[in-house]
Length: 70
Image (cartoon, rainbow, N blue to C red; front, side, top):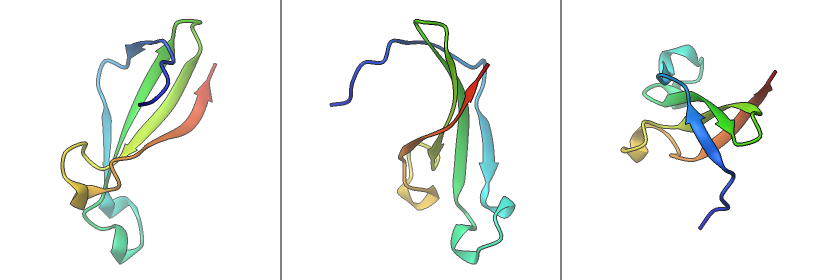
């Protein structure tokens, strides 16, 4: 399993970006779901999951760090 990073707060809602945003035909129908996470220390991160979290056809279903928020 993964490490426990003390995530305590997620954004009020996720932001979903659909494949039309990307130029590549390969990316059409793909989804990125963005979240703001806050860890116990108060540091906040902007992360996204490739896909909708259910269907592999929508993306990798893998989590990525997009940025650190201040």
